[in-house]
Length: 82
Image (cartoon, rainbow, N blue to C red):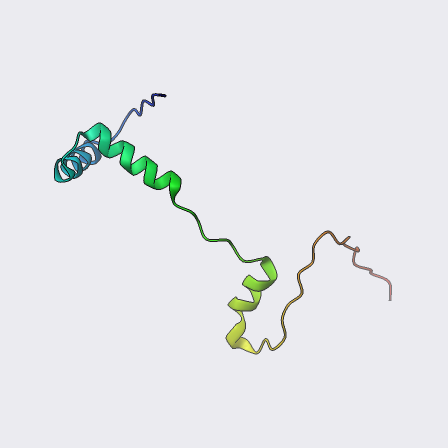
């Protein structure tokens, strides 16, 4: 098993960990293990693509068509000729 050392934890955080550990009936070290397990196993929801996020942001402002998703397309420079 690996070990992790965390330095400079504020006193109130340490006290809070001890209180939580006591409430759960285990050591402060086990409380930290449980917190870390929960944090690592939590899955973040999939993030929507840019076009979908823009459409959602402006949905109430008159946007009536779906915005296309552009992947791997070359960007053409803007022309300045008259």
